[in-house]
Length: 249
Image (cartoon, rainbow, N blue to C red):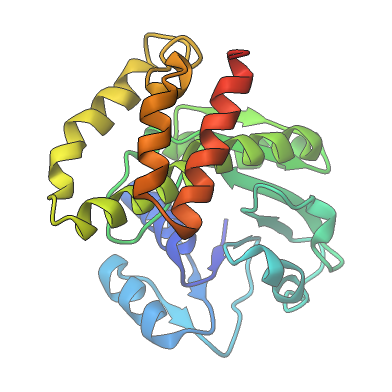
């Protein structure tokens, strides 16, 4: 089966790497950013192009959500299989006379960070059982965690991921701003972060909550608010309000 990956960003890189490590040949990696494509191609020994999209049986579109529809129009081959990797878009966003699918890996991707691909959940949706098996078999070579999922369910999977990953990472960034402002090494907080994450492997997140908000420690809450300003102050108030509401304090 001839497989082409479209994109040059984080997801495209890791999909190409995951396939390559498992000996799944790729016919091409295609995109607009020649510098990034060249880096990926040289590292993984893959053919690449910014001009001509190679003929293939399966195209996996790994681009930003707002570009998926536009990029999908570049695929003119009929009766091939085209899958996007978006967590929030329906497969029907793909525009062409081909079989449509979604191939969603639930993970945060950065080119500079190695991943254990076998642990990544893949959620797959297709138009027919044959394509479901084809993509499930492909994903199963890479991962031990492959599931079928409707678009409706996948929307909530992606929403949950935004809360559990993107928002949490933003809080890390805000926390580092505070520590940097007082010349406190952020490394001091890494054991705390590690323990916070490890704890929810054993304890329900709601049961693991600690801190001044869940204790309703008004004195400490007010003290912290005096130390903050602008966006961080608003985030602090919003988060504490949410915690207190959850525990009806």
